[in-house]
Image (cartoon, rainbow, N blue to C red; front, side, top):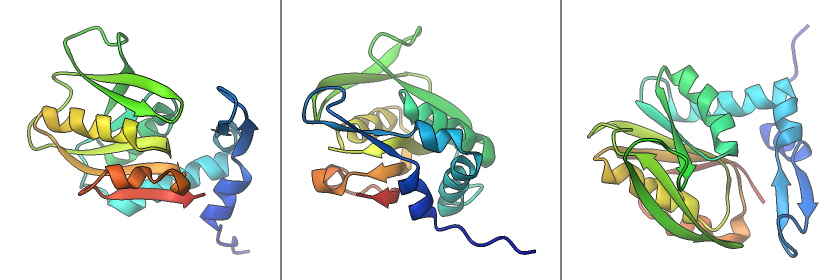
Length: 179
Protein backbone atom coordinates (compact mmCIF):
# COMPACT_ATOMS: atom_id res chain seq x y z
CA UNK A 1 0.00 0.00 0.00
CA UNK A 2 1.39 3.43 -0.97
CA UNK A 3 1.07 6.34 1.44
CA UNK A 4 -0.77 9.37 0.10
CA UNK A 5 1.33 12.51 -0.35
CA UNK A 6 0.82 15.03 2.40
CA UNK A 7 -0.18 18.62 1.58
CA UNK A 8 2.28 20.38 3.86
CA UNK A 9 0.40 23.68 3.95
CA UNK A 10 -2.84 22.00 5.00
CA UNK A 11 -1.01 19.85 7.54
CA UNK A 12 0.60 22.91 9.12
CA UNK A 13 -2.50 25.07 9.07
CA UNK A 14 -4.66 22.37 10.66
CA UNK A 15 -2.21 22.04 13.55
CA UNK A 16 -1.65 25.67 14.45
CA UNK A 17 -4.07 27.01 17.01
CA UNK A 18 -5.09 30.68 17.16
CA UNK A 19 -5.20 32.11 20.68
CA UNK A 20 -6.91 35.51 20.68
CA UNK A 21 -5.73 38.33 22.93
CA UNK A 22 -2.45 36.68 23.89
CA UNK A 23 0.00 37.95 25.10
CA UNK A 24 -2.05 41.16 25.08
CA UNK A 25 -5.46 42.31 23.77
CA UNK A 26 -5.66 42.55 20.00
CA UNK A 27 -2.89 40.02 19.30
CA UNK A 28 -3.79 36.62 17.84
CA UNK A 29 -1.06 34.24 19.02
CA UNK A 30 -0.14 31.35 16.72
CA UNK A 31 0.28 28.33 19.01
CA UNK A 32 2.44 25.66 17.38
CA UNK A 33 2.30 23.15 20.24
CA UNK A 34 -0.35 20.97 18.48
CA UNK A 35 1.96 20.75 15.45
CA UNK A 36 4.96 19.84 17.61
CA UNK A 37 2.93 17.11 19.32
CA UNK A 38 2.12 15.48 15.94
CA UNK A 39 5.14 13.45 14.82
CA UNK A 40 4.08 13.45 11.16
CA UNK A 41 3.59 17.22 11.04
CA UNK A 42 6.76 18.00 13.00
CA UNK A 43 8.88 15.69 10.84
CA UNK A 44 7.36 17.11 7.65
CA UNK A 45 8.25 20.66 8.72
CA UNK A 46 11.87 19.75 9.54
CA UNK A 47 12.24 17.74 6.32
CA UNK A 48 10.80 20.60 4.22
CA UNK A 49 13.28 23.13 5.62
CA UNK A 50 16.22 20.78 5.03
CA UNK A 51 15.03 19.94 1.50
CA UNK A 52 14.67 23.62 0.58
CA UNK A 53 18.26 24.51 1.49
CA UNK A 54 19.90 21.21 0.55
CA UNK A 55 22.34 19.20 2.61
CA UNK A 56 25.93 20.36 2.70
CA UNK A 57 25.12 24.04 2.21
CA UNK A 58 24.71 25.17 5.82
CA UNK A 59 27.48 25.39 8.45
CA UNK A 60 25.38 26.55 11.42
CA UNK A 61 21.70 26.95 12.22
CA UNK A 62 20.66 29.84 14.45
CA UNK A 63 17.43 29.25 16.35
CA UNK A 64 15.57 32.23 17.78
CA UNK A 65 14.31 31.96 21.36
CA UNK A 66 12.27 30.10 22.24
CA UNK A 67 10.14 28.28 19.70
CA UNK A 68 12.80 28.71 17.04
CA UNK A 69 15.05 26.47 19.17
CA UNK A 70 12.59 23.60 18.79
CA UNK A 71 12.62 23.80 14.99
CA UNK A 72 16.27 24.77 14.49
CA UNK A 73 17.89 21.98 16.53
CA UNK A 74 16.58 19.05 14.41
CA UNK A 75 17.26 21.05 11.22
CA UNK A 76 20.89 21.50 12.34
CA UNK A 77 21.12 17.79 13.11
CA UNK A 78 19.93 16.89 9.60
CA UNK A 79 22.41 19.29 8.02
CA UNK A 80 25.26 17.95 10.13
CA UNK A 81 25.64 21.57 11.25
CA UNK A 82 26.09 23.27 14.58
CA UNK A 83 23.17 24.84 16.45
CA UNK A 84 23.46 28.36 17.86
CA UNK A 85 20.82 29.77 20.22
CA UNK A 86 19.76 33.38 19.71
CA UNK A 87 18.67 34.43 23.19
CA UNK A 88 16.88 37.29 24.85
CA UNK A 89 19.18 39.79 26.53
CA UNK A 90 20.99 38.58 29.64
CA UNK A 91 20.56 34.83 29.05
CA UNK A 92 23.99 33.95 27.60
CA UNK A 93 27.00 33.49 29.92
CA UNK A 94 29.94 34.66 27.76
CA UNK A 95 30.70 37.85 25.78
CA UNK A 96 27.82 38.70 23.44
CA UNK A 97 26.71 40.93 20.61
CA UNK A 98 23.28 42.50 21.14
CA UNK A 99 20.70 43.94 18.75
CA UNK A 100 17.45 45.68 19.73
CA UNK A 101 14.29 45.83 17.60
CA UNK A 102 10.57 46.56 17.71
CA UNK A 103 7.94 43.86 17.40
CA UNK A 104 4.18 43.94 17.01
CA UNK A 105 3.56 44.34 20.76
CA UNK A 106 6.66 46.00 22.22
CA UNK A 107 10.43 45.99 21.88
CA UNK A 108 13.12 43.40 22.63
CA UNK A 109 16.85 42.75 22.47
CA UNK A 110 18.45 39.53 21.28
CA UNK A 111 22.02 38.35 21.73
CA UNK A 112 24.48 35.78 20.45
CA UNK A 113 27.88 34.80 21.76
CA UNK A 114 30.62 36.75 20.01
CA UNK A 115 32.34 33.49 19.05
CA UNK A 116 29.17 31.74 17.81
CA UNK A 117 30.14 31.92 14.14
CA UNK A 118 33.34 32.07 12.17
CA UNK A 119 33.87 34.48 9.27
CA UNK A 120 32.48 33.08 6.02
CA UNK A 121 30.27 30.42 7.63
CA UNK A 122 26.87 29.93 6.00
CA UNK A 123 24.18 30.43 8.66
CA UNK A 124 20.51 29.52 8.34
CA UNK A 125 18.23 31.42 10.72
CA UNK A 126 15.16 29.46 11.85
CA UNK A 127 12.10 30.67 13.74
CA UNK A 128 8.47 29.70 14.07
CA UNK A 129 6.77 32.89 12.84
CA UNK A 130 7.83 35.84 10.70
CA UNK A 131 5.64 38.74 11.79
CA UNK A 132 6.95 42.32 11.56
CA UNK A 133 10.45 41.12 10.66
CA UNK A 134 12.19 42.81 13.58
CA UNK A 135 13.48 39.67 15.26
CA UNK A 136 14.67 38.15 11.99
CA UNK A 137 16.40 41.36 10.90
CA UNK A 138 18.09 41.76 14.32
CA UNK A 139 19.30 38.15 14.15
CA UNK A 140 20.64 38.62 10.62
CA UNK A 141 22.56 41.69 11.80
CA UNK A 142 24.06 39.69 14.67
CA UNK A 143 25.19 36.94 12.29
CA UNK A 144 26.77 39.48 9.94
CA UNK A 145 28.55 41.22 12.83
CA UNK A 146 30.58 38.02 13.38
CA UNK A 147 31.66 37.92 9.74
CA UNK A 148 29.42 34.97 8.92
CA UNK A 149 26.93 35.04 6.04
CA UNK A 150 23.16 34.67 6.25
CA UNK A 151 22.27 31.80 3.92
CA UNK A 152 18.57 32.38 4.52
CA UNK A 153 15.76 32.70 7.00
CA UNK A 154 13.32 29.84 7.27
CA UNK A 155 10.05 30.07 9.19
CA UNK A 156 7.15 27.79 9.78
CA UNK A 157 4.59 30.56 9.22
CA UNK A 158 4.69 34.06 7.77
CA UNK A 159 2.07 36.61 8.76
CA UNK A 160 2.00 38.23 5.33
CA UNK A 161 -0.30 41.08 6.35
CA UNK A 162 2.47 42.46 8.63
CA UNK A 163 4.96 42.72 5.72
CA UNK A 164 7.95 41.52 7.77
CA UNK A 165 9.65 40.19 4.64
CA UNK A 166 10.03 43.81 3.49
CA UNK A 167 12.56 44.42 6.29
CA UNK A 168 14.78 41.59 5.04
CA UNK A 169 16.09 42.94 1.75
CA UNK A 170 18.68 40.73 0.11
CA UNK A 171 17.89 37.71 2.32
CA UNK A 172 16.29 34.50 1.06
CA UNK A 173 13.13 34.13 3.16
CA UNK A 174 11.51 30.70 3.12
CA UNK A 175 8.07 30.34 4.74
CA UNK A 176 6.33 26.97 4.82
CA UNK A 177 2.93 28.69 4.99
CA UNK A 178 1.68 32.27 4.80
CA UNK A 179 -1.45 33.69 6.37
